[in-house]
Image (cartoon, rainbow, N blue to C red; front, side):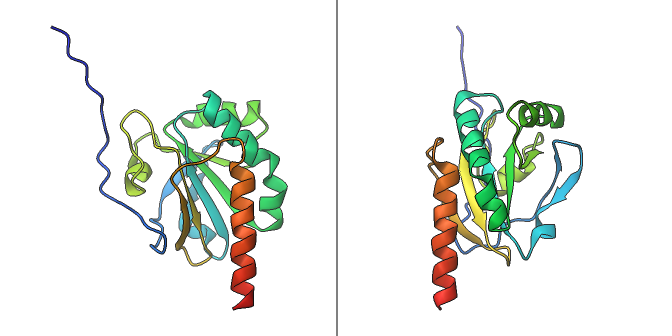
Length: 165
């Protein structure tokens, strides 16, 4: 008899919009430590993706890349997080000329903090964090081809509404 099972991670955290984003320290594609709280005072996009070089993630990464000037103009830092190694992240970043930071969560710690750990891969999910470290928007489902544009549109509307208050 052959028994097959699917390993599903333990997601102890269920984050909601308005919650403080859990702080973390991970290595980027160049082996440098990146700590979320070091980016307080800036908007931050933290998005989780299953694996580098997969068709869906490549489309999503390229959508963010193609809209990166908009992120830069709005002073938004972008972090992409997966279980891929530092070396894999670097190869992927270089292959597609990605201008944003890719982080290696190969021990699944941050994915568990954010409730996206699925065992062998992460859920595809995006968190937009405001200048005080609060989660202002969660994308549970994304369009891989328009995700960059969708985030920029949300941030533009949010900032406009905040300025009018």
